Image (cartoon, protein in one colour):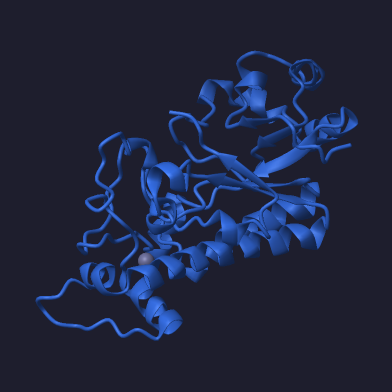
Length: 280
Ligand SMILES: [Zn+2]
């Protein structure tokens, strides 16, 4: 059965194939030995984004990847009762960000800069959202995947830098771009005053923080819903696995919702598996 979801493996690149020369059967034998029952991997519809783990295949090794047959690999996994989950990261697709200009803005009105390998995407840009969801649709159409893993599905923020003693109030919060402000006004009915001395992000955090947090959580919820709809359209049993920030209320108060807009209580009806980033 491919629906147990006990032990999964995130596979950000294909070096097991081009570098370590495993064929499908050898790779699957190792997965079975470890007790893996689902793998989360990329395919040509859902290419990897270079993060801390670069996904690029060196040019001189590309000839090996040319021999890699994604469908044959999926079939081999299925024969071994291992679920095939597509890795569908939401943010950050820099090519699309360049196209749509959805760079996030913090509470001080400052545009986000890239930190190391990371830059977030403003999540209220419909064109960006649709383009990312379309990629999942194409992958579902071709591979009838058992589900998707949605990475970086949150408001921008390099949470790995949140160390003991970090002041959550001084942390850069996103996104206060013009579109986000407009959508917040529509959502809440709250008018954000405009004046030269006033920074909208600071005003909102002082006067409408709870409503603002609710809005952010709703934005994330709606995008996850879009992903879910497209998965279910092709596979009614398809699962949604959400990459989740490890900000439990006991240790981090409301910052999981306030900064990243992830509300597990709200999301639990549309998310099948919360993959909590309990690593550092
Ligand atoms: Zn925005």
